[in-house]
Image (cartoon, rainbow, N blue to C red):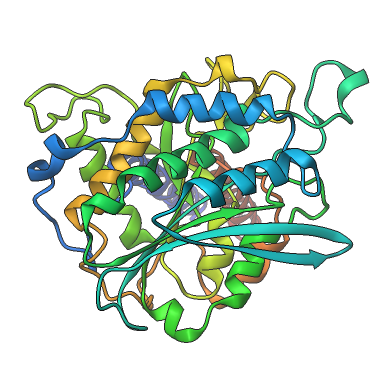
Length: 406
């Protein structure tokens, strides 16, 4: 009887170990595959037909980065911030530009909206919203020089790169004669040192949207920290799963995916990594919270060999020499290709129950409370789950031994 009980215990242990191994294999397999394949509600479009038309100029965008940083830190309420706004209003003559000022928690800030609608547009005409924050961090809390951690940064990558990309897109979009609307949104007060972290400009924009405006928004795409000379784009969560599924085909077409053939039959390089997922809470979250399909294009690993939220991020090393015209052009042309091809126009604009990535009603409250600097890799999540599973199995084995002994 005792031998039979011991044999049953060993059989149980072997079964549990086998279950763990199967779990490891299944998870490892899922991690090695692309994060998203193209899925409903977006449909595949003939992307390569438009590649030869691309005009986004990374050199011009990089010149804007240098100009913005020459103004100094663009903290809300500063002359540098006002100078940037005035320049947008003066130069975007083909756009309907408006300024929207708010005061929250004794902080006054101003969003910039530039709108272009097709001829005959009405309140139901679909639109794409492209977003970047133009403010810069008011402290350099991660700087190695402790004597300078309370000083604002010039934000060449974290601020100027995304803002510059929108300016270059503003130059090339009017001649496209798109059949849908485009809104360029420069948010303010995205990067101010508040605890918990607040996305003031994006939050106020979301509050101002009517249900009709929400329903007609086919995509809300944030461009943030896209100028890193060592560009490494990854999947970012939270984010709309269906909208994310449109990005890999665009990246492949432009040679930004390793070992994938681009539209010129050349093998791509590793710029967009489909197998890595990083948690970033950014200006896209308020849009997600009100039911808009939104994603964040961001390289949060700023600098050669940097880890997520490391390197030059939030330091005085975030300077123009760390920004690359080539990186700006890669991301800018990816967005331009999406616009020209109509890649984001095949969707039912309102979200449904299949939308992925922490976008349920219960989870949005948690998203609002988490700081931008919080990140979990898939490996970390897997390690934590495995540890919990092992603890449960250990308790189960001890319980089985006690029962067999009795």
